[in-house]
Image (tube, rainbow, N blue to C red; front, side):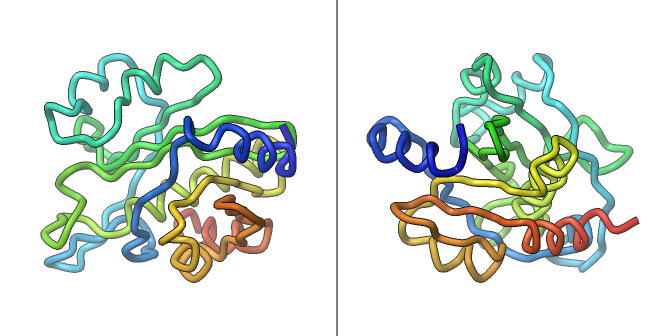
Length: 186
């Protein structure tokens, strides 16, 4: 589906859809320890079935990542600190569409939420990764998602996303490049 087709589809299915409802706390070079300010390089890897044991609602995760993982049209990725692959910092679920990547869900680990979070930059890191993946798949960085209405302005300001109608947001090539440059500058 193209972005306009997504818009129409999402409007018709609005009661069954998921909304992105995560605060972009800070755009960092990697992830940053909230207390010390130390930065840690990260990797984004495909989630595997072994990871599902640690990202459950009983471990204070908000979404059913097992169901998301089983969904055949979705790719689910985890954010980890480089050289510490066992602790998942955040998770994102995306789908390749006709002309862009669509973000279904994104979540920071329970210890990276709220005022006492351990690391800043997790959501921004995952969104930048999705934009980078969009470039690799030939979509010029385009990423779309459905936002909670209260966060439309927040995503415009923090991610450079554009509100195209309803609750659909799109990150275009220029905004994607800025995010990628922030997180993946080598």
